[in-house]
Image (cartoon, rainbow, N blue to C red; front, side, top):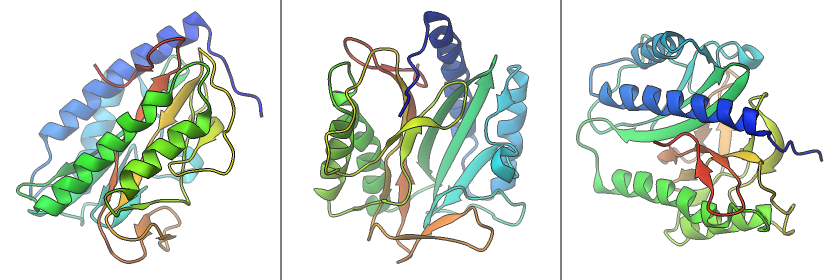
Length: 250
């Protein structure tokens, strides 16, 4: 496995991509409310990304037809936006977005409540976000990749949640998906030793019920098999010789 160590120039470009993606997510978060469609979110996201002079990472990626993956309730990831899918009070919605800035990607996801949501749904969102921060305690030079995986999985499972097995995080840079894969659950090996200059998209995908998922007939949308809610939280992370730098947070 060849994992790219980014040059200072590449890191600067990815920093800028991350700043732009952060602003896109902030804008999209402000529009989440009952009555809007998932298409409205995608349409706004595409215009925002292009307004920054960037290209949406996801649009036409392997045939994906939209710029923002909009996944509602039991949809884990890769939900396809639709004018017919109207958000309603109590839903939760995951937005996964990426931008390409001068040839380099940033990738990040957030899950939001729509209007007033249940305490259980809010807890799932909060725990999923914290899983990311538990994981990146080990995202530094000299640590092993699967220490990140084990920390994410252990935290989620301590709440009785299911950690999705069929989808993982990944390296990111001049390609949206690069080596290495970054699982969100404990592995049998320690994994590769991390080096400064690696850039990873670390993305816990956590189900309120069991970890099992399935793909719908559109070949994109992934849902929980038991119909339980799912949350997603992701950032693009730079490995350094000290604390990790989260490129897609301000």
